[in-house]
Length: 267
Image 1 (tube, rainbow, N blue to C red):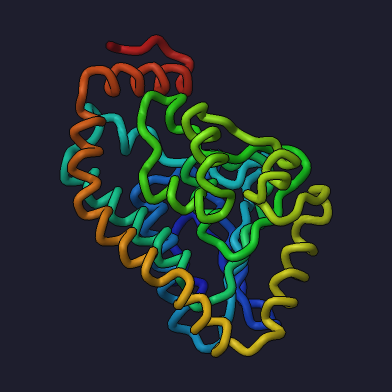
Image 2: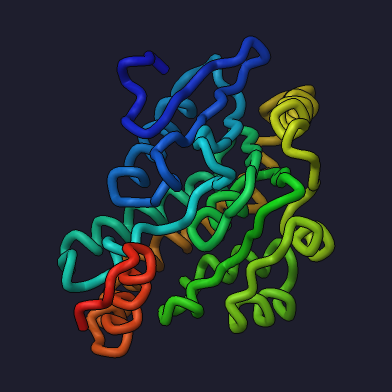
């Protein structure tokens, strides 16, 4: 991927071992805006089209310990957006996630620090997740007054099981790295100084196998779910926009924005 084609907020390097290191560097917290989701999609497009790239290692290049703080609240707060923009936002984000989950490439998430909501879903869509000893991870949308997206919960259920998913999502539980390891939400927990080297070692280990067999197996395991996810998002956004436009959710998100800005909510 040519350096001049890398979207704003990202850095991409192609390692000699045949994989791309994709650094998310949108300060201060890699907020998942519409442009950010589209940037991720364009990088995935380029990597999948490049025969030299066999895998993607996703990491944060931020100054603070945050993988990504999740979806941009301004993309969800009805008074600051529109139904049409929200449709574009929702379809773009979920199409990327579904495609990442079923990508023929090897995908590894190197999670440094905080990884709530949309960040958690990005990591779950990867083949392997390594997390630092400090941080948290989970689908905590309920704490913001909004529902957890159905396919995000189904993906979590595929990884850790239905009972654990219900408990975590209904209680907006953000797990510590050790708790996440115990339930199987992450595969390894390592000191921060070892995150990059561990992720690289995992990637190189997975790339020892021929791509052909792995890609076909991955497709058999995940393609049906991925295709259903994309199809469902085309109807899901309608109900989601109705929810986001309701007085109760608008008020709840106004409070979230106020806390983030340190200002009194304009209700």
